[in-house]
Length: 390
Image 1: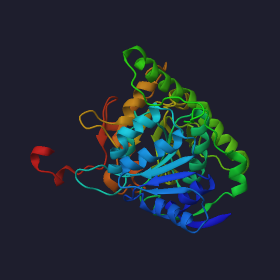
Image 2 (image 1 turned 30 degrees about the horizontal axis):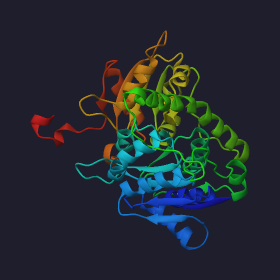
Image 3 (image 1 turned 180 degrees about the vertical axis):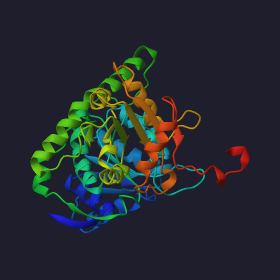
Image 4 (image 1 turned 180 degrees about the horizontal axis):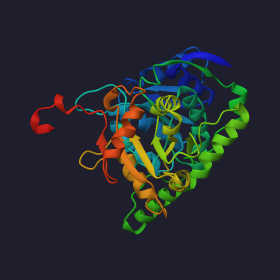
């Protein structure tokens, strides 16, 4: 049924449809509306779960670690510095192979303090062992949240659903909210074979010496790699129920004959899609929406790039002193192609800076001047800096 909902409200309702047993969270802008809406559903008796208000994000992550370990379907959400405060526990959760879902309302990292959107928070914990899925709009945020619980519980890996702060979380859109019957038919009750049970004692998170640490990390790496088909099947099976797919690992849109591609993640894909439609026909590009960042779908990306002469990677975070994070990984993934496209890499929209429709044309012009190993911040204005910092 169609509803006009704020993104955060829609995500909260999607979480409730998945019937979590435990939700723990500490408020931080722009995540706050999500957990506020969940707490209201609990207070109104519309969601039966244990909602735990904690004193920090570290505690929120610790609570859901414990609840997931006992076999309870668990959920949390955070942003920015909150994600960083969770970081130690995020690695623990993944290393212990505990299924759960976290919404990251993507926001810039301090300093300087900035509450607006980019992807630096999620990118900073990209190696924690969590599956990371990025959403282009609020319908995808709803559907991906529901899919995330199934992916997590089938792979026994935690899933982070990345939703652009403010751009999506605080935007009112008409969305199609699935029914409880649809979600129940897709997502069965959670059973966790490795849960802590006094009748069948086992240990989690114990000390591992050099004899087995390498094998434990290898096991986590292989589990992430094996999750690729599960992400695709979760999307395909959900599409059979509700008629919508969210893009599996990645999607390609635009003219088949285009030799230039543009790859991006998150809500900027929606902007680029509209910008591509108003470009003159011969200038239109193949637009690639990367939905799964972890595990990284290298083979799917190589197939999508076949025939391209140039691939422009646009991202909303970077590694200071190195360059683009996504761009570096794309270059590594395409290095094995017989005829890889030249990769141009740009960051844009850091700290919530606006990304207008004209960005795509500006990007295509800037790519002509950038070398194959280059990285640039497209919308930086050096004149705002003292001469020594330009």
